[in-house]
Length: 153
Image (cartoon, rainbow, N blue to C red; front, side, top):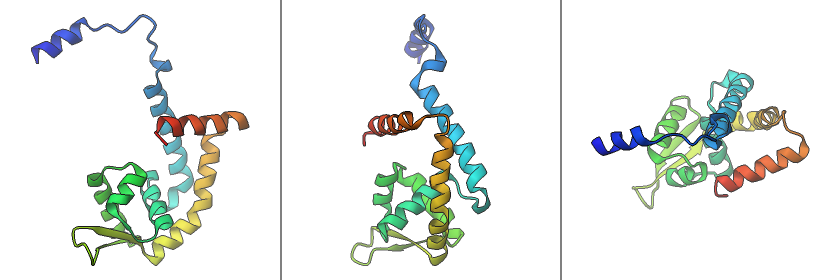
């Protein structure tokens, strides 16, 4: 602990370090803006952006293992279990053990969950458009490509 404290005391931000120009800070602010737009636009269903992403992933994959949803959404498995449990309490998702591998848990959308996703997909597309409003057409393409590259896709 003493070594870290001493190193922290000695660490000084470089003179050209400007918080408002740091990628992590800008990504966080952009994500906060997107989240606010999502909540205002998608509000009536009471879903978070992450819950909606999980439901869309299940919608696209059909019955799918929680481990695969975790990979596709970049949500750690422990967090995903909580999200899926909350969606299950709302009768949007059902989780069952895989008959051929009891260790594996499979998720699928209920009829209500499927209807919600189908109804809200156009709204989600609108949320993306609203998030990208400050950008012109070329900047939108560039922003998506840069974010995909940063995300390792």
